Amino acid sequence: MWLGTAAFNLAVAVMLGAFGAHGLKHMASEQQMQWWHTATQYFFWHALGLLALGVLAKAVPSFAVKIPFCLLQLGLIIFCGSLYLMALGLPRWLGAITPVGGVLMIIGWLILTWLAFKQQ
Image (tube, rainbow, N blue to C red; front, side, top):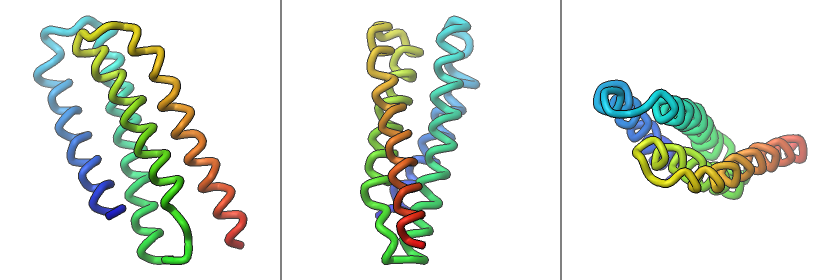
């Protein structure tokens, strides 16, 4: 499940990146393009991180990745999703929930850090 979710995220990140580069750039403002670019960068990096967690779960089944994975996935959806929606012209108040996604991603990475040190 973890590898499949990560692979799906990566496919969606490629599609959204391509849409931003080819379909959105002619109708979006510079600010909207910046939001799109930021969302796509975070999407790719965290999807790669989730892929690494999926590989880790397969290689070391005793290493519990469920909580960090779920926090990262939820954070990714909220952080990137809110930026994508604003870039598409939806209300800017969505920017108020963007930090919630960022905090969830940070917590996910910190829990993974704690689990890694605990594992040793």
